[in-house]
Amino acid sequence: MTLIDQLKPHVFKKIIAETYKRSGFRVKITKGSHDYGVDVFAEKRKDKIYIQAKLYLKQKVNLKAV
Image 1 (cartoon, rainbow, N blue to C red):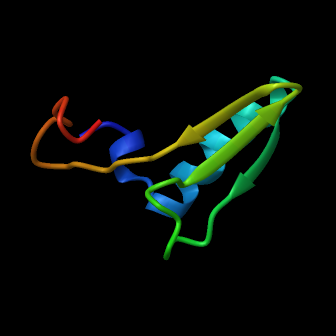
Image 2: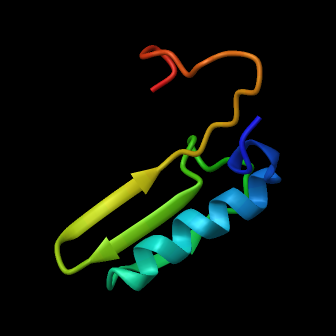
């Protein structure tokens, strides 16, 4: 198990948001319910990125999940 696997989901979302923020994006972390699967929203000029964070400990994320 790697260090990133040990993170709590909300901490992982904050790391993702901070990474985009440092790249000049305005970011918003969604509350979790009724978010249509979006965990982090990042926007810079006309670029809009919708991010869904997944945590699978026993298996790899498959293409269908993405």
